[in-house]
Length: 170
Image (cartoon, rainbow, N blue to C red; front, side):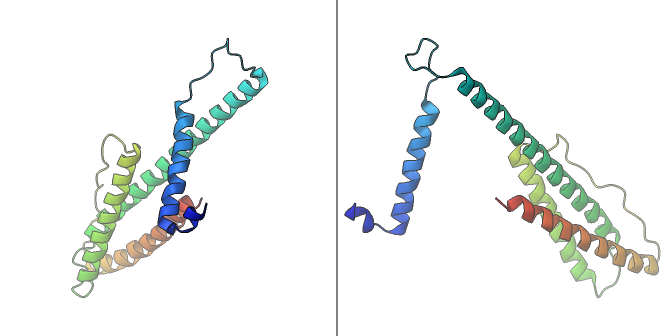
């Protein structure tokens, strides 16, 4: 026991992980007992355990579907805003660099969300494509559209932030 006290925190953490892993691994290798087993297992216990497994599986499936829906909606919204930001090109020389940077950030965020969906195995077969962009024909329409698009994008990103923060809570 004195040897453990002299170990570094990293070594202790590694040892703890190794112990947890070995405990879990042996549990995974356990073979179900045959009906002719000498150990009496009450039927009520088995039925209750089976019900708990089904409940956990259902909750896991429900959580994955909710996560899929959230990520899908987030990605679709980002694709929409990509189109809207592209339509604002040429709004003014003063805001053009900021608009280009915002468009790049939205595109990168959409790519990140899509990659996460692929990693989770919940990405649709076909990647969504950008819809038709609105045509802002006058300088006034571009400025007014810019105010509306940026305002709505800000609200969308605030909501996305709250949802993602919620999903990261244990």
